[in-house]
Length: 160
Image 1 (tube, rainbow, N blue to C red):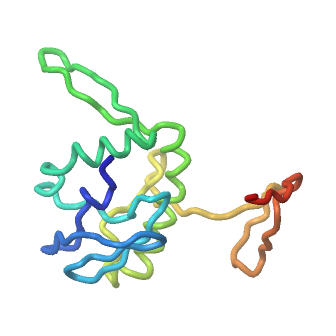
Image 2 (image 1 turned 60 degrees about the horizontal axis):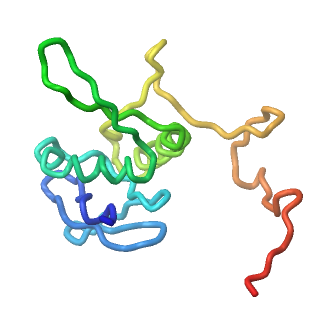
Image 3 (image 1 turned 90 degrees about the horizontal axis):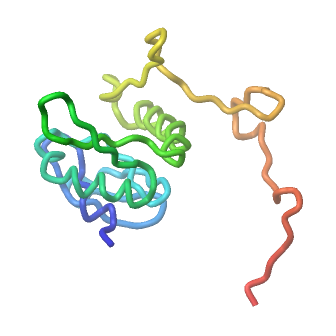
């Protein structure tokens, strides 16, 4: 099985270096840029088109293998069969997390010009933002407003 770092390269302009590391972050061996990792996938800005054309199939195959995308054939009139990649249920669940990570990167890493991609609401054209709400629909603004504990009904299981 190909690990995602075998096919993903640093997207910083003119870099294209290899990404190394495991765990919560990976780092470019050339420019030293750090990228967060979500579910084993480094969250990086899409690479330039010339890079993607060379590595696109391997990246898409990895996302299909991990059930984030599904590959569907289609054919336009008079054209050869092609494939489109659609989000699976797992991919849809990942969408909000990706938007949050993009917004974090835009705020802390992109500089004053902002990030290269803006995700907008199709109906009104306004940029998206992600917010946290509890089951009673209260907005949560700060980590200090939260607490963590075991899930109700969860029993302790030993490894022995």
